[in-house]
Length: 367
Image (cartoon, rainbow, N blue to C red; front, side, top):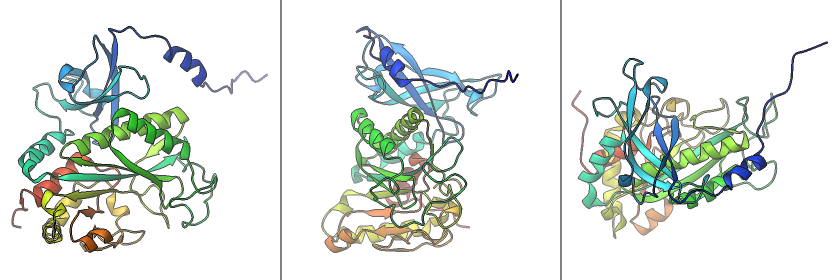
């Protein structure tokens, strides 16, 4: 007799709902603290109870966690501080409950190496009179638990790219339930999500955050990533922010950064846009160095990308490093699109360096 069990544990969302619908005391609010771990890419979270609904992140105290388990501290001195910096409505627990975006600090109250927000805040404050706006286009890929793209034939491939971009139908739009759930959750939470669409590779999607001014863009993009990961978790699906999840003749995944200043948005702002592109070209390698891990696998000059070793710009050119949208070219004002950042980039680092290069005039040391 075979005594080895083949049963696999699972959870029932209908049972969970019974408990989520239990009344919550008026003087008890769940605050989920969210932070970026030592990889600079992954998110962590834990929840605490507070005695009243916070109206601002300033109403919440610092907290701490075990940094030795997140790649941010040694076991002999493991406590890392969490500093609340932004709060959002919680679409999972509803009511007065909140999601809290946090910065991380070491035992001596110095920022951890993965805390790129500090520098970004400094840049945004220095450029505040230029009113920098950002729109971030986050691409991602849905994967089954085995790591193969969601809805793809096991051990095989779907039809070649072509019908999937903004596609409709069971064989074209793979994972729409997750994408639509995420859209509504972002709106509920207070994320300024601008839209969403199916991407060129099947099981790949995109959503846009913005326009947001200053630090809000990166704060909201990180929070939107958390929402996406949590929602996919409920569906038993993984989310990959890898810039080239599947080798071969398939599109990679980016996080295009649309950027403008007040003068770019004003009449004849195209002149300022062209000046900004020249500045970006001069620091191409420096920008690439903070635009995401394994980005060279995506920026090949194929699949709607420029080559990582070259810089080019053009109107309506999706094979350019920086694209000027057709409408901007016609109206002579608006914004530029930096198409180089990878899907796994840190938006704090990306928006930081763009502002420092374009608005603050920072240059690389002479070689």
